[in-house]
Length: 82
Image 1 (tube, rainbow, N blue to C red):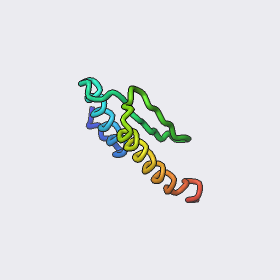
Image 2 (cartoon, rainbow, N blue to C red):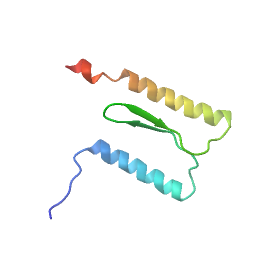
Image 3 (cartoon, rainbow, N blue to C red):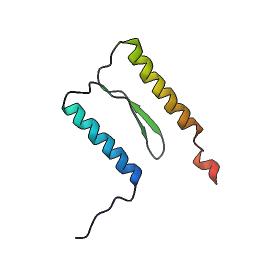
Image 4 (cartoon, rainbow, N blue to C red):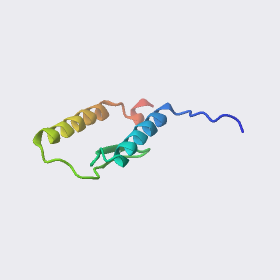
């Protein structure tokens, strides 16, 4: 067999992040996650685990989700590009 190369560098970056998170979960360093996924037809949000009731922690998560929402909303719609 020949060499296998990854053509989608974005997919490889996602794999790297997920592998790193899995290692942290298995080590007991992570107790919860907020995962926003982009599928071909829709976006999804999953929040498995236990989260702190510390207001600063909650504000940090909400702030990051707000920034992500702004980024997603500013992306051009693929239908508008035609």
